[in-house]
Length: 175
Image (cartoon, rainbow, N blue to C red; front, side):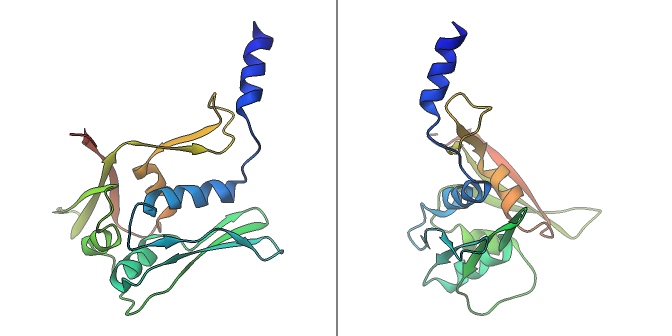
C-alpha cells in the first residue's frame, strides 16, 4: 500500500520550484486580476539576479504598490527583484495607498483605520476569504501545491516597516 501511495505522489510532482519562483507566483496571485496592471515574466541576468516588473499607466496605483511591496527578496546567493514605473513618490503609507494599490482588484475587501491609545492610526487591511493555490513542489502537500491566504502573502511580501495588520474577511467570496 505504501508503494502505491508513493507512486501517486511521484506522479503528481512535476518538478522542483525555486523559492524565487514561488515568491513571484505569490505576488502575481495578489495582483494578476487587476486590469490596470501587467505582471511580466521573470528574467535572469545570469548572475543570480531574477527580475520581473509590475507595469501600469495608473501611476497612483503603482506608487501605492511600490510603497507596500518589498522590491527585493534574497534566497542565499540568488535575488528576486521587482521593478516599478512610478511618479510622485510620497513618504508615509496610508490606508489610501492600500485602497489605490488594490482598486478594482477583488482580493482586497476593505481597509479600516482605527485610532488607538498606543498609536495614531492602525490600518487593518482585510483580504477576501479564499485560498491562494498554485503548484510549487511543496512536499508537505500531497499535490505539491502552495496553499495560503492573501494575508499571509502580504505579511511576507509587503515592507516590514509598514504599520498595518493584514487580515482575512470572515465572509466567503461568494456571499
